[in-house]
Every structure is written in C-alpha cells, then in structure tokens.
Image (cartoon, rainbow, N blue to C red):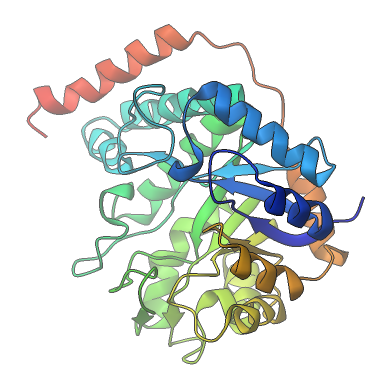
Length: 342
C-alpha cells in the first residue's frame, strides 16, 4: 500500500473516530508519540496497535523522543529515569571508555523499554555542539562541545538503540548548537563562517552520516543561505547535509508547526518538500493542522521511498540482554560522577 510522506501525532491516549478516519484516508508513513499520549505500558502498546491498524500497515514506524534527562516521554512511575546526554560527556572526560559504555547502556535500556511497547524509532542521538551564549533548548541534552567526542558518544547511543531493535534518528542536522533561540518560538540565525561550521558543527555529524534517519534543524546558516532555515533550504540540504556531511539516509523535518518556520502550515509543508526533505513531521495532534499538512504532502516515492525502505530494512531484532545487570552497571558508572564531584 502506498503512503504519504508525513509523520503525524494524535491528541490523546486513544484513537478517536476522526483520527482513525484521517489516518485511514491520508495514510501517513509513520506516527509520533508525546507525553499526552502516554498513560501506562498496556495503554501505549494498545495505542501503537490502533495506529497501525488504522493505517492498514502492521509495521508502520512509531517514533518517540526518549533521550533521558528533561526530554523523556516515557517516565515514572512506569518507566525509569535516564541520565541527560551531558552526563555521558562528563564521564567521558574522566574515562572515555566509561563514558561510551554508559551512553550505550542507557540507549540499550531505553530500547528495551520502547520495544516492549511496540515503538520502533527513537529520535536520538543528538550531535549538536553547543557554544557559549546559545539558547538552553539544547543545553544538557548535548554530549559535549568537542565534535569528535560528541560523534563518539552519539555513535555509542545509536548502537545501543540498534542492538535493542530500535532505529535511531540523528538530530538536529546540520547542527542546533549555535542557535540563540528556541525554534519552538522563533527562528534562530547563525552567522558563523563556513570554515568554522565545517570545523565544528558539521564535523560532529560527518562520522554519523551512515545512520538510517536524521531530523533537520529549523536554523538559518547565513553563510550558506540567509533566507531559509536548513529545513526549507535546498542549498543546505543538497550542499551541506547530503554534500559536506554526506548523509544519504531518510531526512525528516523537525516539527512543521514550530514558530521558527514562516507561513501557513500548507506553505511550510510545500517548502519542506521543495527543499528535497523526504518526510514532513507534524506533532501536536491538532486535526485542522494535520489536514493542512496532509493536503500538501505527496505520496512517498522516488529516492525518498528508497531511503525510507532502506531505513526500515536496517532495523534488526533485539539481541539477548540482561536488563537488571545493565541498569546496575549504568548506575555504577553515573555514580562515579558524584564520587568525583563532577
């Protein structure tokens, strides 16, 4: 069955009749869950099943942002708390192998949580490289400020997810670390030179270019395109994301409803596809907005379809895993930060 090139959210913890009809008629490629969609493990599993049934696609990808720290859609009392990305970076500075191991363990445990609910894609890892004065929207979600270190930890996270049967989404390509505004509210403009961007921000993404999926940044890089954020910039997608960074996987937008983007939802959606982004993401579950996005979304076809098929085909069944031992090991590694006064 053909699908349209968008990912949608829904409003609540169950699928209502209007949402079911919308999904059945518009055939989104995938779905994304937020805290408003989460009650307990049985409910999440049931909702995931409802979404796939409505779509008529038993393997439709279901995404979530489950990073740890302050971006964790599944949380207590039904799911454990995980460290923010910054913790792995600080541990890495003390002992690089310990930092990488902790990042892998955390991701592997998260994958175990997600797999049990039927969720198949995690919007993680981050390869953003923050700088002094940047907006706190990234903040302690980042693994550090050195590109090689960030890339190494991001790789460990991606491998932990993949080992647990979960597809990773690299974000926010080509870099959100210099943004001086939260893209939920307004558009950040980065005026850094091409040479510096290639040395720092883009350098963190380059070693991760083989990952199956990535999410764009709603950030203007004036050295390349002063008029459009990366999400709607044909120049940045072709020259930077596909070119300098070398990413050839499935490219999805960050949320099209964020205020960083200009114009109506229809205009934003058209601009995203015109820039050669493969998939548009809409998150908030507002039915009027969902319809506006779907109306402007084409069938998934051509290179975008090939990339989508390749991404889904790269997902493997989880390998054997001792969850209890992994959690004990992760906690012991993170405790080293406290013992060191870090």
